[in-house]
Length: 410
View (cartoon, rainbow, N blue to C red):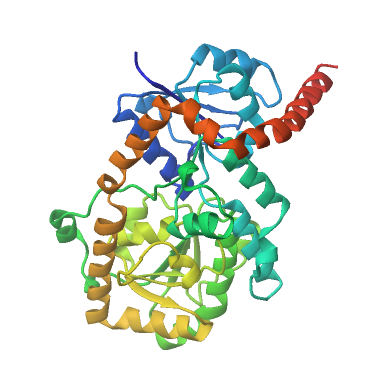
């Protein structure tokens, strides 16, 4: 009998708009390679940029929030595994999965730790250092409860795994490290990389609706005049989906600060550019833009926050900076220094092939999933805190949902 994976998504994947969308397609491909039948469910509306999952042999269904029609559907689908794409999705549908498909393995793909990003955002906006009290928010309590309720949570960053296990004492048996999964960079691919002399200008990219990306653009605006003064021929091309009005107001042709909007082809844009700028002030998880810069042979200048969890003991493909002044200086140096630029490109290739190549992680993950499927009762009995959170939290979630459902009928 063919195993069946049901994915419940907060949104329909948009791999050309967000790193989360690319991540979801990587997981789908991983399970398809194991001959899983896959169904994707979401209550969100599709956009013109939503990925056509049906073309990848993934069945899709639109579902309603706070509606028992989901109970009927999930029972009919009868999945072996249910994967929630964020903790909010698990809150909304987890208790219904438990009631209707109690034997399904429940996996949470955290994307990144929302409570970590939120804590850093608060500290950043208050212009102070992060302290441990910042973590303990409502988001933290909800996200940790969701992690405990699931049989396994996928963590994209080594830093986040260590934070959960060392500081918050989460049992490692309910966590699994699985970063972005990409093909290795081959010699043939490297031979097609445009040369230093064939590239020009700086580039930045990121969905404008994502607050850390917007703050990154503001950081760039602040630094750009100094970079432009040293490199008068250079321009900064800022790409990103869902451009806001406030972002458009930053566009300045004379300064060479150009808001370009949605990127039709990241590969094409990154092949033309000489340096990616990513002065990321806060966030969590791994940064898709930095991974893609390595994939397309584009060195970058970023911050410690941008590079977190990505390079381990390996050299960075460019510069990691700690101050605005350092960022400006290193951006100018990387743009002009061909020797260091070429070495940085090589560093990026090494990082991809040694830390993100998908074969390093796929077998280990599938082995873990198969073990859990075969030993689910034992695993759940050992995760006694998960049972506590199921009993307490889901009772309130369940009855709130049922109340909303009844209210909607009147």
